Image 1 (tube, rainbow, N blue to C red):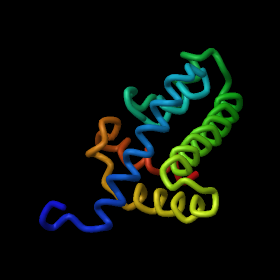
Image 2 (cartoon, rainbow, N blue to C red):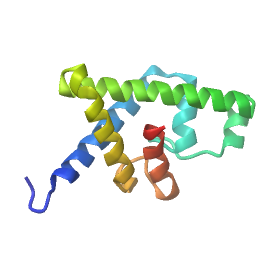
Image 3 (cartoon, rainbow, N blue to C red):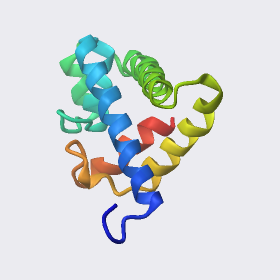
Image 4 (spheres, rainbow, N blue to C red):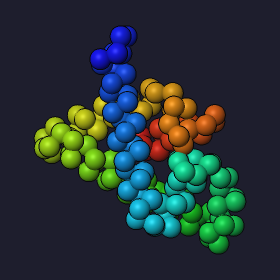
Length: 130
């Protein structure tokens, strides 16, 4: 362990890696909803895009975009959960670990993540909590 490296920092680092892995899996799926979500919240490798611009880019209405983002957040939650289960090894331990991941992501300053820049950094963490 590095001097001054706390358990809380280790947990935050692990939580960020879980998010990175889940986001990479979402990108690999090449889903339209996943791309919308990542652009809406500025998740790497995308920069945040205004909702109106997303509607134009994806030729959709604001209502349809909101539905797609909600569904994509659900998929990202599933992918995060799968990452956690793969790490902890059992469903019994999963709930507590998922709660810890969310807590650490919300408490982290996410500029250290490649997708986090300025105003978008905390939005990325908020996606996970939603």
